[in-house]
Length: 71
Length: 359
Figure 1 (cartoon, helix red, strand yellow):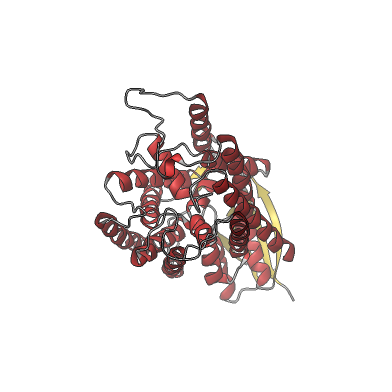
Figure 2: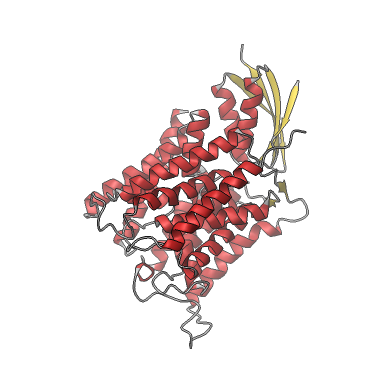
């Protein structure tokens, strides 16, 4: 499974980078990031692209989420 | 999803209504809120520029910082962080301010001006959207100022902006005059826009509310257009639609709606530089990751890079008034026109030069 690190990036780079990977046709992606704004933006975007969003871990303002293409 | 959109519109309506009320309470016309103008007034109150007509310690900005800090802290979102091309952000903030002071307003005031019937602001909005589009072009090309880091050693840095806001409030309330012979600081305009203001505690209260809501909604006009162009996301634009409707309705109710180009409050009708001024603001805002309002809110969440861009805006305000770059209701100045063109070139060069590094 591919992983993507968007920690500390200004808006909208977390979404742009996620979009780039999802557009390349992956069905599963782990995204690591920081801050609630990026978390909300990335998960909202992934859902609009038909991905299931699962928060794997979160601590100290950093989070990891798993995006899986909904069947 | 629908609930979220209603929330954005309601937040916008509240902010728009507050802006209209602040004008009725004494703020300059169509200037219930203006991040650029108010930072410029604060810069003048501190004596960093000497334009006598635009000096006042605007409590709205102090309220914004404290309100956004309260919202971020209560949600566990305050986090001291920074280190993403900080110096570049200082200069982007500086140019963003120069563009805003040639247009005479930040993106938020642009919407408030349109809601007051000022058609010059429609020209400005077109320029703003143009600047955002150029910024989006750079983003698609891989523009990246690099990642910031969460400060692991201490949260100290994140509190600087909050401390400054509290200190400025104390100085304002106490009425201390550091150099009575010179008349200040703090300096207070006796005439012009700087002399027009709502009562201190009302302005502070409005700032607190708007800061709190802006943090919750991640309010940002450049982000609104940017996200629409990039990913067809409309939430932020809906908030600005709310602001527009809120201020428009109350302006009509209070008799403050006057449709036209001529004789608009704190505005001029140089169409080319209304367009280019906000073009520079839109472009700089996209590269910074947010408009002037959003930079203040991010700074209040502990983003020290955003705080530096706010300091860049303060420096930009001082430059703009000391070097005769800022426009006035009489129009733009030749120096201001040159500065906007130079700004667009320099900021574009930054947009071109900073690209992500493939790892």
